[in-house]
Amino acid sequence: MRRLFYKGLLADTVEITGSDAHHLMHVMRAKAGQEIILVDDENQVARMEMTGFREDAVTLTLRQRLEADTESPIDLVLAQCLLKSDKMDRVVQKAVELGAVGVIPLRSQNCVVRYDAKKAAARQQRWQKIADEAAKQCGRTALLTVEPVTDIQAFIAAEKDQEDSALVFFYENEDQQTLKDYLGQLKAKRIVLLVGPEGGFSLDEAKAVEEAGGKSVTLGPRILRAETAALTALSVVQYECGDLG
Image (tube, rainbow, N blue to C red; front, side, top):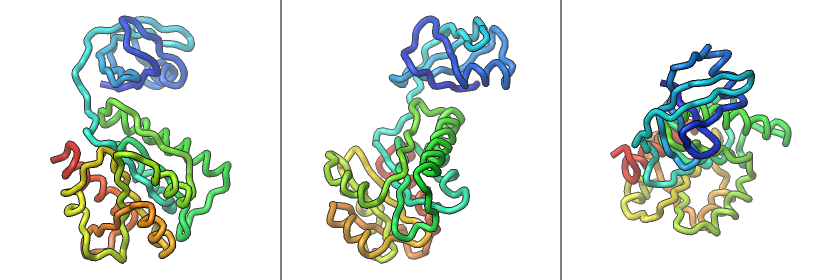
């Protein structure tokens, strides 16, 4: 059953407009009596029946409230340095499926990809659309937020002020502390995973992260591609601290 996210609160009757209404009427060819799952801004979920159609709106009538919270008990954020080709698309999509609440795309010294302001904004919009569609497909009860493309130094400075939060970064020069061992002693509710680009972190970037309180860990003896490291890290953290275990 198709899932939609509604910008408002559940009620006996709600009206869907904009691109979602267009998709229902002109792509799905929806008819009165068909049902969808609706998720509101407070993560409430309900089964709704389509009962009315106008040129630019679909009216939904509440049929059953559902107990269907699928969100992780931890706030998991992926800070991913920009990747080339369509690898960022895949990382964003899978981050949604693995229960992350946010993705922060980062410019770093060894990034192959370089966007001007206009291209960076367009990419953010693309990634947010991918995230929204992934949330509908995998049954999320909250949307993941894709932040604007940010310089890694600005990101590090912002993370210094975060409370009840842990910054973990995956560094090829780390060979002692494993992610599993570090998570075993971690109490923070918010966990930020920092993954480098294809070329890895520079020495200056790694030093700056550590000085900001970040903890370097290893994902094992084999060298993982950046996109593999991101998905592996998300999975391990959800298994150890979230809802995959």
